[in-house]
Length: 167
Image 1 (cartoon, rainbow, N blue to C red):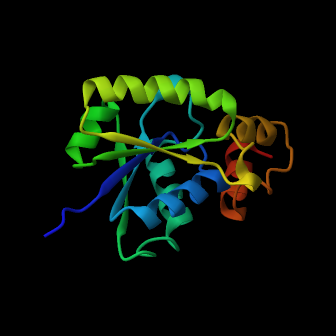
Image 2: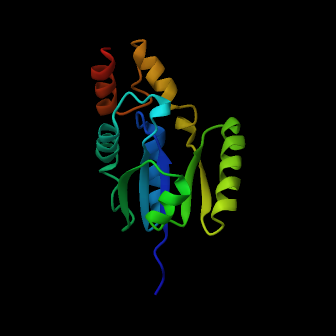
């Protein structure tokens, strides 16, 4: 009997972008189960509540679930990532890398996590070419200034941003 390979993809997803959806779909193809951990992080000043972000992630990835016979689950969390990974029995942390500038931060995080939990691996997936420049913070800034974010998020997210920000 082989054990199930469970991974966790953490983030604030405020809002979820096409880049996030791409990483989720790709990670789900290599794992038996992927837990999308939606971080409760008031310090980042999210524009959507945790419940809204969980709902938006669920809606955005509904078409991906069970694409490889595995499952994708969305769970909010507020604990240390390693603690949350243990809670959901994950042995892999999935991280997306957009640019070289992400590497330093992700390398530090992976190293710290490895020191605290050597049995949990970090798997970095390179962002696809068409998404490597997308960041939620930039999407929010563009949307706040009534700019067009249609290249970066789905029509559903674009509409929700417009409703929330009055654009």
